[in-house]
Amino acid sequence: MFGDPWLSATAKDFFDKAAAARRKIALTPISLAEVVYLVEKNRMPASAFDDLRTALSNPNHVLEEAPFTVEVVDAMRQVPREAVPDMPDRIVAATAVFLNVPLISRDSRIQVSAVHTVW
Image 1: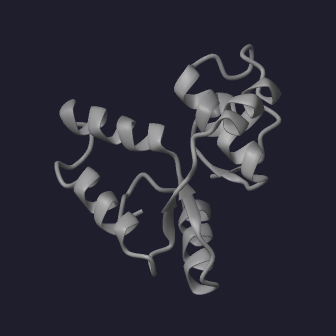
Image 2 (image 1 turned 90 degrees about the vertical axis):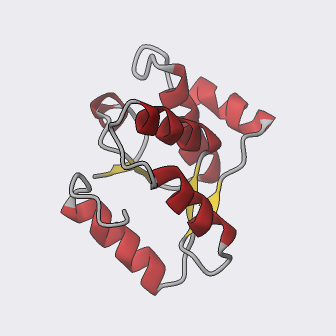
């Protein structure tokens, strides 16, 4: 995303096709918090969070903010803690389960879980 060299060709293609079809890709609030954390650790460009905020504020952009609701928390029960032990990762996975959409993730634990992933 935004020219990230770590993004797999499959994930990039998924983003491109969603944008071409004018479908939205939901970004979880916990993922936004992780971006801030990674920027602070100098593992992402300093502009990463601001770039995402700009994209999310544009109603025509492919990205939109996903809800974090009691229904998402309830969906966490469908993502076994043994499979995805990290709570933020479970929230991300549960969001995909709740929305009934594939999850774009390179996280190996999520990929081997029952959550449908794209990478």
